[in-house]
Image (cartoon, rainbow, N blue to C red; front, side, top):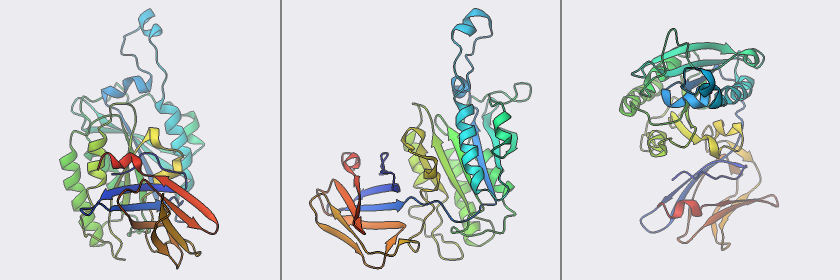
Amino acid sequence: MQLSKVVQELGEVNVERQSNGELKVTATILLVPDVEFDGMGLALDASASMKKMYGISGLVGGVFAQAVSTENVVEPVTKKIVDFLSNYSRTSKVSLVYWACNPDGSQIEEIGEFDKQDIKSISLSGPNPKKLSMGMQTKLLPPLKYFVEKFQSSTKRGVKHPAAICLFITDGRIDDLEEVKEYSFGLAQEIAQNQKPFIKMLLLGVGQDIDEAQMTELDDFFDESELRDYEGQRIDLWDHQRAIDMNHLEQVFKEMVSEDVIVTNSSCRIVNQSGTLCCNYSDGVPALLQFMLPPGSTEFTLEFQGAKVTQDISEALSQL
């Protein structure tokens, strides 16, 4: 289980109960990658259930429409994300699209490419109604294919040097999950054969009706896969996050670390709430931590250079 509440020093924490009662923990130290991406992608859900988030009441006009007018929350959030992502793009621009357009949710609409200045003057209120309607289904495969094709010419091939990061904002259930998984596996095989560049995908759930179980299923899709890139790094295309759980935008990078990246050369040890030594890193603190906690553990603490970082894991215990 992936914890929803993570301390600011950590990016992602997953807890898995073993048959002997021990708890396997996989955690990442939150780092901003020291690489420049060839591109950044942001896809905005334009299905009908998003109308209120775009400030669309659904009423035709008149006093009723004025009375129930709602705030467009998509626009300011999108502008903030673009401002952030543009700092890591080689072109300083982020590619924006609407997805889940038209009744069957299979169409996308290109909005354009924007840097942190361009995005300030753009209105984001959903797809152009003269061209596309807001969808009754939410299909992820079309925007996924769009970004893969857009960035396929990148010379950056490996997990350590991604061509791009692409965020897909959604408020509900993905209607073509099996097709997305099938396409993603084929893409990962091409990456393993050095035929396609690696792109990291992040599903960002907003609102109260997101299907987190489904998002987790896609996030965990490559957990049992042995596919690796040309440098031997494990290929994991998907990550997910609930917007309500994000403490800061740097968490979009929370899975983009590897165990051979050392955060600090000082030794580190991990103990549980009882002070039991669970793991000892004598050669430095890796960005990707994997260790076991004894049965009954409810938290773990990283101790290094006189500092401590404590993460509560009790949230996961009732779910395992």
